Length: 213
Figure (tube, rainbow, N blue to C red):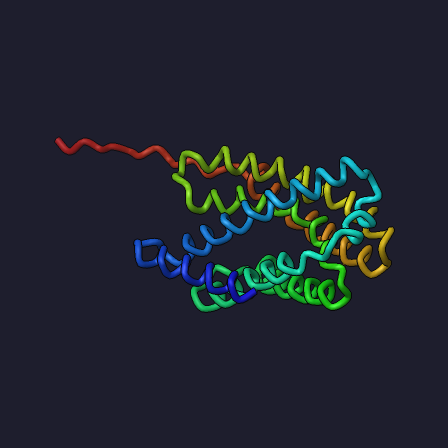
């Protein structure tokens, strides 16, 4: 936990020293974190393919990976602090999202079920593309936006539906938590779709050139 806090704090202030504004420095932190967790998520998704719907049992039988929950708690904690003091932290996707996840991770750690967090790691792949949009040149952003949308559908909507089914095998509490995640993801994607696909960009009015004889 403290290693994650120290690492991302150091990276944030190092980037600031090299001229990054705070929002881009936080986005870079988020990209590194999401890329790492997405890689770990591939492992959990592979386990799902191999063990099919028995993945929760498979994960709970493995030695508990406490370091992973501690790492994620550390990242969310420092991101809350940096986002609060330097701005750019959204109420729902920032304060509420991070706080709820920290409480969930502490609960998993308390009851020695930390490995279940692997089920949620594939959710971070869209976050990786979203963060990359904020630190990439403008001409790459439409492609990254498309990558964000497609991975959101695959991992946060379809994937979340699978997680709800698997959570039901463990406990009703986890089923409720996974269902609330699904509601949040649907609302988030609906808002993103409205902004990106349904609203037409404003066209600049042609400039009138007047001649002064």
